[in-house]
Length: 380
Ligand code: UDP
Image 1 (cartoon, rainbow, N blue to C red):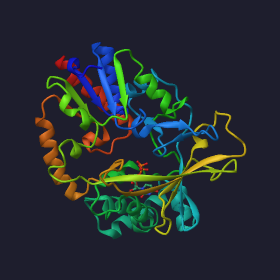
Image 2: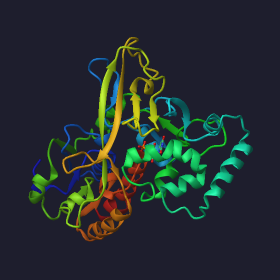
Image 3: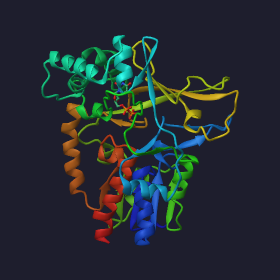
């Protein structure tokens, strides 16, 4: 594609970038170039069949699509069907298995006695009162306020430290509000009415979104290598890390990256569920994914399964960022980058990395649809 005659370039082929590119091509009938330094589309949501077993593996950790937004659900269903998978997570604490997020089963098992919903709510409310927290300002206070210190110490404190390597007092409270607390035996991880895994996998979904004659995709290409060649009138939709865009001039924002240790095991079922968390600090990984459980509808091998142990660590310059830490010191730097981003002409920042927000897939899509309508379609 000739960069000189280009009106739109999208940096990053994850959900935000792919949806914006699709909208530009189908609604504005404009040509759009999508570049990604990865060798595949789909960003960190990518999944592909394991060559040895045929089991669809989520290469960057389990991705379960879930949303309460009818616009997002309608949009994504025009590219794929979903299976009926409902996400349920268990957590291993000191060798015993508990339901996660915290529900009535978790509370009864942990305290070793049967309680009614009312009794469990009273118990946790007393725990919260005894902590003296009134206005929870960070992850630790919020969690203790919701479930009391004993449950926090068991299931949240060490897992969070492994995941973020940051004192939970320095982390934003909204990380923990992702998890509901339930005084019932409902064990779904998400409350959203629409959930599932794309029937033919995320690779197929992304191929469908980007399958348009006016969308060209260039993989294995770093935007910063071609940046100087982009004409000034071309609109850049940038979904890479916001601090990298500005050459880290205010310093580096905190990011977490993940390492995965994949293993093909010679058993049909390794752990009996898709995701098992490990709450103890003595276990170095945060969770184990077993991908066959995402597709009960598929005829997978009876004698083998694929698992992946997930390890979290600080993200260095050449690592793949996954999570914005958003600790107190990050928020000051972020404000400076965001002010520059607001002033940048012809550049739109989006997605988890470009906005430095802990967005789920559906929120990235919602944000792409909104930005397309309010900033791109409006200006065209
Ligand atoms: N969390 C925890 N224990 C768990 C599960 C989650 O302490 O067993 C905390 C942890 O801080 C985590 C946050 O809740 O980062 C959000 O969890 P979620 O499962 O939404 O994280 P993701 O799947 O996006 O990594």
